Length: 488
Ligand code: ADP
Image (cartoon, rainbow, N blue to C red; front, side, top):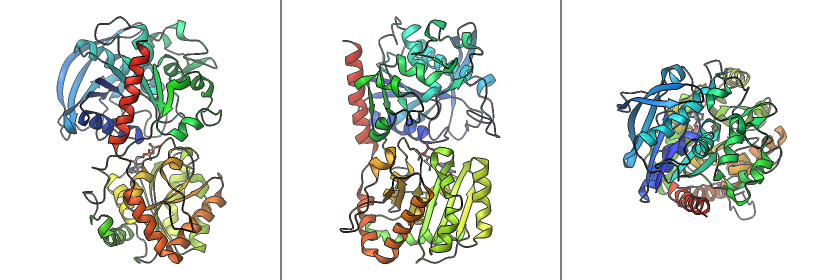
């Protein structure tokens, strides 16, 4: 199958979150299974042309928007397994400091123009390059309108007209809601500006329209698929998803064990595996040093690596984290950025709780790996979590997750059973600071008082397999079903 990924992020070129990890990994797994995927993303200002060997592929690509012809260029690089990655260069839209917002977290108001343009350019690229597409894989609100363009502008095109579209929702909390300013330019058509498609309380909702036109919609875990069929879990889109019937399913993300396996991880000071798990403590020592924690192998370290966004539930730690370090002998190593209130709170805690809480405010891939490798537990108190990758990485690093049982967190972590020692982590259900407090207490007491259970859990955690190969096979089944149902 010729599968074209059109997305706003792809690891390692451009990443703000899990979407990038999926777009940077799934195509590689599909290629290994004998398919022919390519990836198309925008050429953002901070993509390092030299580091990733980007070369100019096409000087001029003409893109008709609703009321204007734009000209852009295309660059090329690749992922492992020779998966081609193409970059749409259009400085007016992408030569900016951030992907979706400026450095002060202000959303770019022309985001609909930017990403609709990008999506139209990607489709035009396939036509210009005579790619016979079987599947278009669109991702989140940024490229969701592609499902509409393909059906309205290109339904009869010899190269892309027959392709089936799969829209993958990585996070339904972000829907691409904007005013109708500049709607003509988007080329979505006023005939599609109605309640079932792009109209939403008088404004535009790009994800909603994308869902309407997609041949198939999926999200990134089975439990999140169920949660998004409820009003609260779907942020209002549940009825539109329900309308898709069996054309809406959940497929759990895989993870890229080539980047996230302590046996071969090049970021961490000491590699280890299930047989040499005792060497993990060398990473713990370095972690304690770098986060200015008391160096003591016997004190459990709880790691956090996260965007500081409401979704991640870190506001539940306001005050609670202080109760925890006051009442329990435990340390925290925190890495993240985003919400300014949380940044200043987590930034100030190390001064108040010296040696007990360490933090780094910012984005740092090496430290993310060090936290996974050096911590004893990993905390994710998410309000909702479509899939979540960090808890899956944690399992492979023998770093037991403490999570709220939602979405992919519920699907991937096995609850600790105190009678048998079975399980891979600690789950709580209530969105409540006390639930965090007591579950951390449960984990810490297991560490101190039931060490044999802790070790048994570590072993089971490391053995868990969430490789992309498994998920990629499910995607192939989904693609085949989509093509079949489109041709009925
Ligand atoms: P989301 O996509 O909602 O942010 P996921 O758990 O699915 O959450 O994926 C987060 C990814 O981003 C992981 O690979 C994680 O390591 C990475 N990440 C998040 N914040 C940071 C940070 N401050 N520094 C380095 N990596 C980070």
